[in-house]
Length: 333
Ligand code: CP
Image (cartoon, rainbow, N blue to C red; front, side):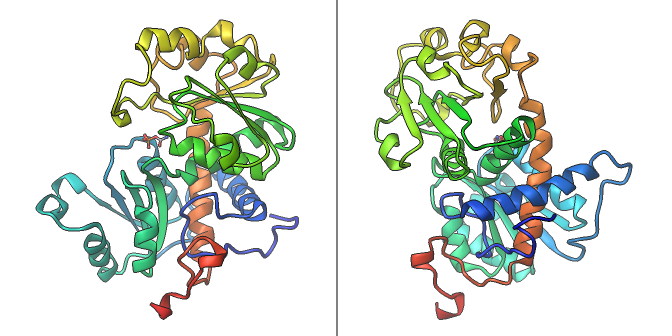
């Protein structure tokens, strides 16, 4: 690895969000991911690092990228993977999240990767089990490994983070991806602009995240001088009320097309966490165009998740609460 991250460890046994990580811890994860990515070009893409460990996947919401990426990350570290099919499990008979997790722990799993619709569900688990809990997306709270893979991709392409302008477009209100990205980008010195309809971009985002975050409802203003255009999926399934008049109108004002992209810097990256609603928040000509790094984000996700599993396994910490001021030893429970 080299550099000031040499010998560093993560402070907590779990990864619940980026809000509670220091910039040094984020850098540690990104630096650790780089050599793992180099493995992908080899004919044998595996290392024995987590041999004998078991990673349980507990997904209460659908996923394509995060789930397969964690499975591949664990497999490439030689861990065993246990994928609980929630739809055909005893969850359907009313078993609680905590009881499900305690049963997995009784089977001696070492990691629980959890996706859940309730914000805070991973923190609840982290308090109750000894296993390392990794948040794979909780409600509209955080999706830390998505944030990390996005940071990794931006740094890889732009060779820096400090001073970049990253414009995040769309449904900020419901987006855990946006929240993890805002925490990560601002901690590493990027400027963040949020843009979308007023109903989907709460004005208090400016104050919630401190300096370095601007809010605008005008795409031209948002993209002017942008180094990255990060398009969010319109999360129709999370919207309880009509927050914009129609998909056609949303696309007209906020859908990223070639014309709107021309307002940004010539070498502006186009990013999207997936899954995409083509023709709604992003046009295919942009999503598949030369400035798009959307599929590279997916590749980088495996390396970043390998780094997260590797570093958590090496954290000797028993701390389970992310905020330092709240940190309590598990044995004190
Ligand atoms: N980006 C992301 O979380 O995608 P999935 O829902 O497919 O995991």
